[in-house]
Amino acid sequence: MVAACGRIRFVANGEEVKWGAIFDRPTPTLFQVETQHFINRIELAGGGLFTEVIDRDGTFCWRLVSGRYFISSIFPFQDDAPSRRDDFGKFVFPGVAFQIDSTRHPVYLGTLKISVSVRRDFMRNRRMISKPSIEVLDEFDSDRVIARDKLGVDLEKKLMFRVPELTDVPFQPGAPEFPAILRAVPWHLLMPSR
Image (tube, rainbow, N blue to C red):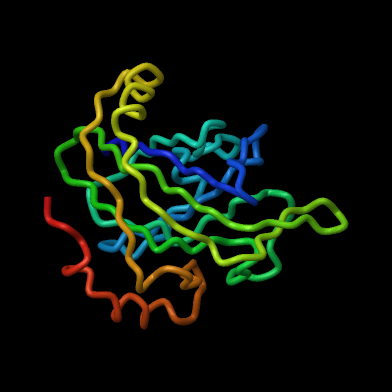
């Protein structure tokens, strides 16, 4: 297993979201290409039901086996549960990929910055009302210091990258178009060799 570290920054209405207590943080789902397996929050937390996979400052450090991954969806606000898996007001489908080599050296994936417009309903639940703007930022110099201080690890830079064909595609467990999406994406062309 390799430590894959980075950060998720969520900007709502022009202001960076400050994450609060447990269950008030973004919940990502990963997809591993080789096994065709979705990795949920509990698996990312190492099996801990009440363990968050994103720290309050947006940083993360997940233990993953070598392979090709993409972040298939992020459920950013835990105010209430979405009614459908493809609810664009509740989920972000960033279409961002990365690769973990078998080097066993901890890697830095970068910062995934997601900017949206948000409004609150009558119950004060947050709902996205604009298409997310997705960026992958290289904040290696500052984040590697945080990783060294917090976790005692030195990181190797292996930035995640955007896969435009998968942005805004509701790609989650149970999605009926899952096999067609997988066949349509030229993974061998999109994954940079490093």
